[in-house]
Length: 502
Image 1 (cartoon, rainbow, N blue to C red):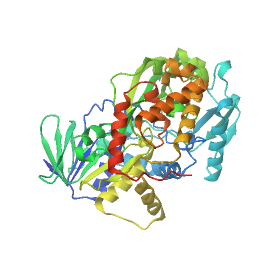
Image 2 (cartoon, rainbow, N blue to C red):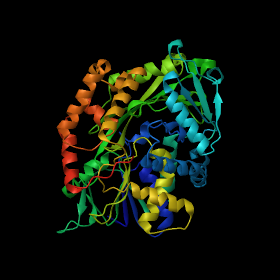
Image 3 (tube, helix red, strand yellow):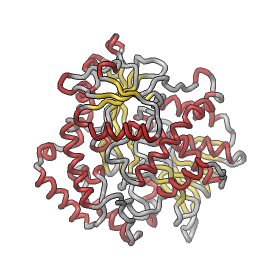
Image 4 (tube, rainbow, N blue to C red):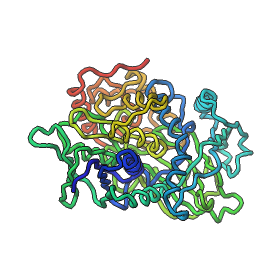
């Protein structure tokens, strides 16, 4: 089979991109490749909170790149109501998607003071409606005495949807389009033109079939890395994609009676992008999503960490509601969040192989940003532009996250070491022991500094690496040689490192 556009990945990034492409390239043949079960997809474990201000921390809003990524989230949030209405107009009423009508409560304890002020300041900067609320006025909040919330912020426009309902609705719409073909298989190899290997020719599937296409879009999350590995010439050119092991739980909270949680509640992000959040069902509040841990792995793993699972459960009872212990566990959800070694996404075309495009590396933010990311990607693919101020702004932001780049640098190596020490301290304070080894939980500051310095010496790099990239090495979740191999290749491909931001 041959296609004008071949999208690898059938979760939120892939389906929304196909949807936008079908609107802009009405006569093009579009293929979507991905197994129907979507096992390990980040979307399958997502809470689908449509918020962005709750993601702000005192550390991640201080530099140009973080602010640029936040701007994408800000523009994407405003697109969701119209996007859902557009999808609902094309499906039967029973397949329609609803946005939860209520907003989000962000919960802070005495150790979250800096994040509280960072979020408050950002809300005021963007003139976003909010309300500071006393803990006793937050419905459903019932923490244990030892972990009481000290303050809360209610953000009425930070809402949520059911991610599975969104995927199903998009599939229904795309199935009605004769120009779109959904292929229930896994791509295992990227194929380039012979003999120069300078342009895309298509992909090979696990069943051996070859699909021909001159434009291939990798939107397969963590799976995009395995496909890039089939083209040795890409090694080091593009920041390596790691896997954030996301874990969540589907609960039935009927037994909680009047203590049922009916609003989205969450803590700020803590060490390792770890936060607690509960998201009630949109159509039936009886069902509750509880998440979510984030354990970084070099490659996706089967199963999940018992310690991480226990940590989420224990701390949810401590910080959100002690009554959750009476809920029934219906399902454990796992998703592999595609996260680059520098922590920033991969958007756009590869310059060394014509026709290869990337839309991945979004960590746990891909769902919230998907209406905007797909909108921009489809316009880039089709050469469609407008003169709107919004497009001018987002175009510049997308270019900052182009795939072929050295690891983004936002601080010095000394600052990165200090930040990692700080993140480990926060994990200890918040009892997020699921992301730390027993040794790190008790490691004294001087010993910890020496251990981090040893890792940098073994990596033989002057780059500053984010905490989420170094912490797994300290925890011995993967061998240091894997990261060193990538950094050595990146040094060869990009001999002049990107300048560190002040």
